[in-house]
Image 1 (cartoon, rainbow, N blue to C red):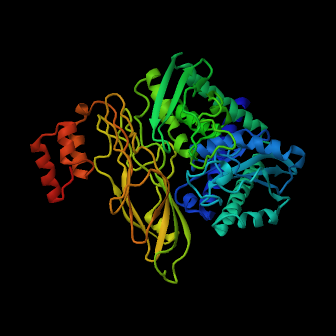
Image 2 (cartoon, rainbow, N blue to C red):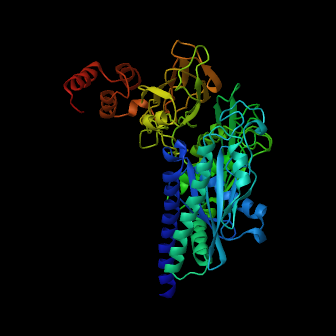
Length: 569
């Protein structure tokens, strides 16, 4: 009876820890300066034991941040040194290899003390709008060009912020108020997590976290291993080719299921790119683990133990294991395609479980605005950096359609037009779903989007394109059709590149069509009602309904009549 009561108490404490880190994350959302954090949720938050093992993560956040940050805290402990960890300290880094993959993410770690004794750590990460250098984009040839590097160091010692560090940061970035504000927001959200943890420890009369840590990690490890043990002992290869920067890149992975682990080996993957789309292993590992976890154990809470049975291997200097000083600013472009490569292998091991390929990487772009240079600019014209996160469609699932304009695997939210335009003198002239972009199938792929962007009168701008699937659209699974590819042109028809900084003159607009997710299963097996509903909602055209799904002219006329009458099918 006592053991049973302790299990119940530990489960309550586990749930409380998850609530604590979710409050920690929401505090960051409320206080961050960057729109990518406030509006898109590009962040992570977590609590760790004294050894640096992640015990709980916030629901709000991205797999890339969370799973990479799971490896980061032990680096902080090692670099700072246990004898140099004091109450009131806050630590910082944007090291791509000991943080979350590129210089544009800042990770903060705060030791948590209870009654004068170290009991754990809180950590959080946020994407920041600018870190100096060339700016956020793929154009750099080495990490030295990509911005200011902050090694693991103390942001604050015993409650005193390092003002020399603040001055160095302010002197090297384009948006100093935003960045410094985000640094304080990160530190504050860790402090909120710490306060809630101490409240919990006092409520349950805990002197340390060792008991609850053992309960969490043991149960998570056992549950994950049970799921792995139920899989067939087999191997399969997955291959995925995407645009790259100037030449296509191929991700190749062999997934092998053992009794007590799953190994994903990326031997055979393309080598390093000359430009900044290379991916450190910590970030590729984050998304490879995520793909396997959502496939076999999605409801098991994410922590050090539930991630441990997923082993990721990649040769040094492949594009998924880029080492210093490789340029890595857009490491997410490669990292976000890792799950599709893993799924392409896993589908051969356990058919009917994983989705078709989707848009993959986020459809991000950053606009660097300035007063026009071809003629006198108005007095109100100003410089500004505006980063916006957008999504194509996700791939269709075995039993469900893909999600429209929804980021998978990152989970980052699409930013509202109003928030983007509030951040600087940019205008979003058009933002709407892209009909016929979802691949045909028994389950239809998710739709991409159309976007048109320009600047307010008196401004010109550079656009940093961060797109893929221009030449390699998402491929269907089990007979499903491909999603539509990406396109980017100026409003006068001038073709633009999918990646890189490109000038846009005063008065010009950039017209973008983001990719759709692929379909799943034979399109002929899609129900007529579903096809008619898609047609009525404008997701597909009459031509697509007839060509890909065999919808007859009488049924098309019925839908068109219903639309004309304002009726819902």
